[in-house]
Image (cartoon, rainbow, N blue to C red; front, side, top):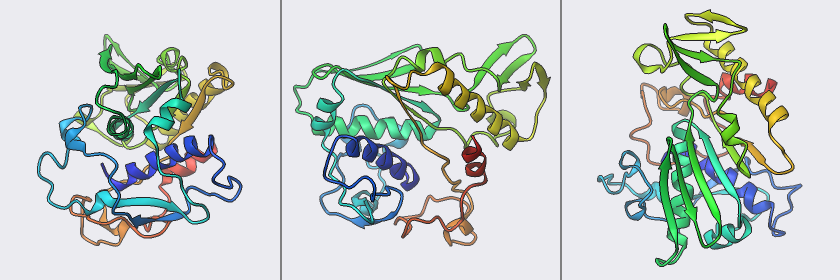
Length: 291
């Protein structure tokens, strides 16, 4: 799991923790301002012993030689961050349903969450892991808490029509499933510029018009507005808390993290210092803020 994904997970966990603790002054604690610090008490779980992790993400089991990156934790500048306590988390979330919705970033988030909880609970805990209609759910029966993963690269609908697969920028029918949860954590971005065989759609529909393609940033913006309107109109925010993880930076151009000539982050060993990404804010973030 990469640093960008860890940071997003930490921010979400912090939001949960800060909402139920008095150990931080929330008015002065900006979770996004801080730095990565080395802590020998980390990591909090061993991925090779977690039954919920996909083999593609199990770096330790498949021989990654360097493990130093596992011992960094995020430290906000202006407040002490309570250490995550899996049992306390489950007690405070008793009876709640949590769902991650998005692409591989959401997969990373979901896997890290359930692995953290697996490591925190005693072996005799009653935990079930099931997949129904592509929704994977781990349920902590002793607490009545479920944590689900719903894979959705674009959030809006992709429908098989007679002439091909159509991404409908104005439609979110899966929302009927999502809104039944108590906590929703969304993410989308990195798939919007995939082309050819890498994209899971053939056409785009917008305002009842079928297009072969369109400006991808404009399509992303329209989809986010559809999602935001769905949250406003369909989600009962008295019952359901909604998070949007923001936009992850790409990791294919080393110039963005001061490594000229590098085309991916495969050989990176240490997190970047500080709170600012050298490559600047991704362009998609500007569109996201407009929503």
